[in-house]
Image (cartoon, one colour):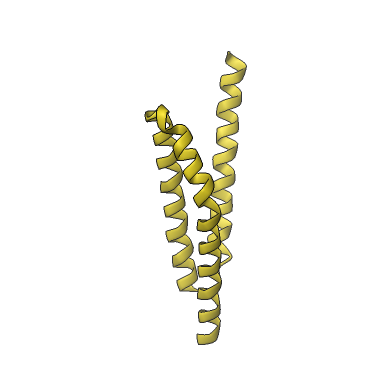
Length: 97
């Protein structure tokens, strides 16, 4: 029992650290103020989405499967939208520079 608890805590901390580091460098590697603002808004929205996902799975266990399927289906579309939007902002900023 103790080993599983320690593994769960350590694994969660490593996952959170990876998310923080990835977010930091994603924002740091932007080229301009609009792109940086978009990345910050995107990071906040993603963090809120993750917190909401875990809250629903913990607080409403019967909805776990449904919310999981919705997230699996929507996730690729959200990533694609964010990547396209970031590229468009980057192109606009480069054209205006």
